[in-house]
Length: 231
Ligand SMILES: Nc1ncnc2c1ncn2[C@@H]1O[C@H](COP(=O)(O)OP(=O)(O)OP(=O)(O)O)[C@@H](O)[C@H]1O
Ligand SMILES: [Mg+2]
Image: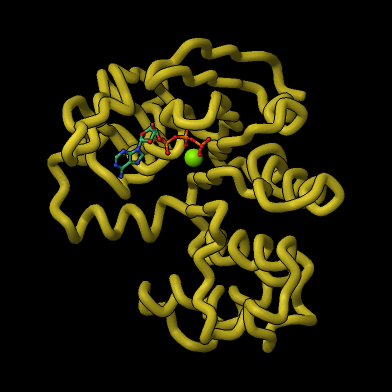
């Protein structure tokens, strides 16, 4: 059996503070390369917490996170940053675009951090913007874009380092169904056509049904994990 790209072993997450809260209660999960996985569940059930832990943006209180078979807890901060930068692409609901940077510069950012040369950066950014059909807006600033366009910039930015794994937390949560459909098709195609591993949190049952595997989270636990054939 191939090594899963991401694996969680008995992961618990407790948020501290005056009233500690146990948000994840013993999650065991293997995500295989190229899978398209939807994560669904009620508000507050732990979906975003799970995504942060899968993306090594947050650490579990106990349990293990393995990225391509390597224990995240045994990686130093530098190695973890490299994993986040090179293997993982994040698309979050609150786009997190830099408002003072143009569309082009936003998408370029991960490549700058990665010290990619200027000529290569230009080629990659243009290609990513073309992929999300925003070539005409590259000099615009985020405030001059619609919600759907901002979301596409966030996707282009997540793709610029050509990550193996895309983590998308309610990527169309702010958009109407008309604007969300092409974005969702685009994200699902990253797996179906380009072989990326895609993990997608959604409230929308129609969107979840586009995936070949649906994981339901309830009260910090995996309630169901259903695999079906590829659509
Ligand atoms: N930083 C924090 N400190 C304390 N509690 C937190 C923190 N972040 C999240 N929680 C709690 O952990 C639980 C899970 O939160 P999480 O954001 O993972 O839910 P979710 O499933 O993503 O919900 P939603 O669908 O509303 O986005 C919630 O009860 C939330 O209040
Ligand atoms: Mg959430």
